[in-house]
Length: 278
Image 1 (cartoon, one colour):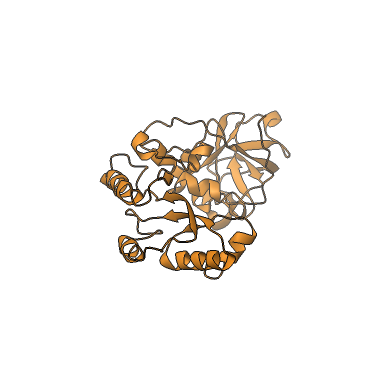
Image 2 (cartoon, rainbow, N blue to C red):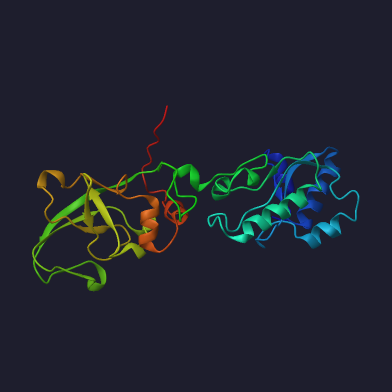
């Protein structure tokens, strides 16, 4: 943000410069400190979101000293449609990036996000930037997922009850029992980031057996129809699985009408996290 260049230096941060104003501020601070300052430069190749547009580059390059004081460590851009491999914008952006990075000979280049990694070597350049792929989200949704899911999610049962035919469960009376049903309430809801849009469209798993959501996803709880599940497998204190081998992040995203990125980034600070590895 304007006025924060000195903060980057004080905290050892390398900024990605996106517009002429940021470049001017970084140059001015370098001049004041009497030394070159490291930075990356982002160019826009067709996404029209962040990065220097062609007009910016043309205007800046008229000044031979436009990068004076900038220790340029990376030139980068970002792909708009990499998750759709056949989209013509992928090749257009690659060619455009090739043209623009030629203005910065010897500087490492980066274009590929998670999906861009799987477009092929022509998009790889010097540095790859995988994000969702690190968690196993499918980088090319129209094809088989080559990745293993790295995230699982479980929630604890807090109550069990039996309801009779005609009884409603949850807000809005969206679930009406068709007969005697066994209902489990689990301690997770939209305040944790588990989308309310999953109401009536999703499920959990008890020892690998699917149990459907019964009613609306609430702020702090979800009700499940666990009719037929043996009593020794479902009880207060036991956990059920929401992300597991039987239900991937992409599965949940499809049920909610969104993408896997949103499912994972919504998982909030109320979860206990356990990290597995060496």
